[in-house]
Image (cartoon, rainbow over all chains, first blue to last red; front, side):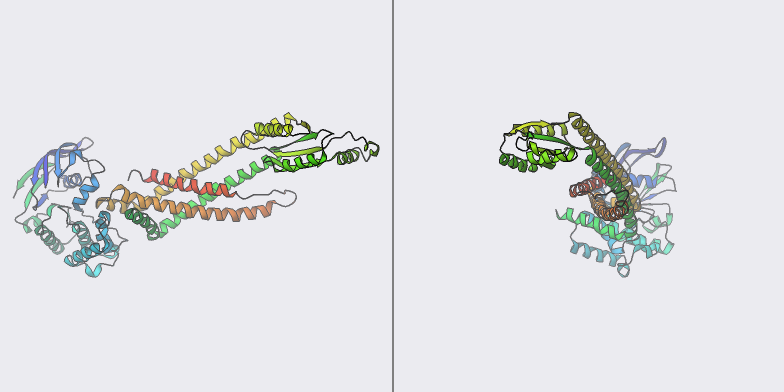
Length: 220
Length: 290
């Protein structure tokens, strides 16, 4: 699903990622662990097509990042979903509208869109909030909306950047259970975190330890 | 096709969804277009004044004394139908004699009636066309000279030169001015759309994040821009009509007697055509990097 070979990335003369090489198998659950400033967000942005590959070779869900042009980026993003720490939901739109957004982009018929939105809202316990504008939701609810939006199209790969960063311990645990559930349905999960406790909650997961842009350790 | 219609509809629905931002944009656009149109209206009227005072000339046509009066009168009727001819004053030999007598202070010229030396005459007033005015008048004069019975066409070539110079000058000033106003409007409209986009940057970012292509993001923005420009243009025209009416009432009194004409229908149609084009172009410039 993910295959990186000697990937490096610099902002100006400062190298944020240094010679990264690793693989992630389809259906796996992987943690990208490291302190703040280790390069986790930069790596996720690279994998999601927000940044262009500068050095090395990388393929994401069958897309070769080295030859990825501007037109191909939307296609990559329709295959690979992402959840950010700061949610990035549209506050003036309802929960339902936010979740339906990726399906709207893909031109999925309305009836099917409705069915899938209802189903995902049930799984994530959002059905009572469906018609509320996101600005009125708590942080945990907004995070669940962001996850629902990311998984509603059954992506092959789900990238997540510090998804529990704004949440308390209990909500973080519950959220991780949701990720595990989707992983069991076949979605590959690649989750960046600096919270070691989360890693302990998924003992079978692969862990990549990133520090100052270097891959220090790979286990699992 | 359905998808395009959906995206265009989405653009219009989005206008309503962000009604406050879009309302402010609409007001800004309306005022901008009103100011632009006001400039055009003023320059249009100045040009009309220049053309009506300087863009006309007259010449006399004399027929042979032996020409049949019936045939001459028929030619006068035909002359009135000519495109360039604004008005025509005609004189039969008797009327010409009467006019001469009046001009000389009511001198008794009745003794000349039996052997009247004055020919049938017409004083033709022409409005010069904007393109090739000199050539058009010379062509008209040529046609008149070819008519049977016409003896001479008396034209002051200095007057023709002066009138055609004014016509050309007004042409050279008016259209570059129009182009300048349109350019300025396009520039400011582009910036206005860019500012509107600023309020949508969050939505655009999320759309890109979930895999929206350029068209999915840009087409609704285009539709919104065109609708806003059209509505803004309509409102601006309405304001202009009200403004023109009030100004006309204020200016068309003694001692000014300045009549302020509204823009002709062709100008309005062209204005809307250009406006929609400019809206598409300027919104494209504003959003092309999305």
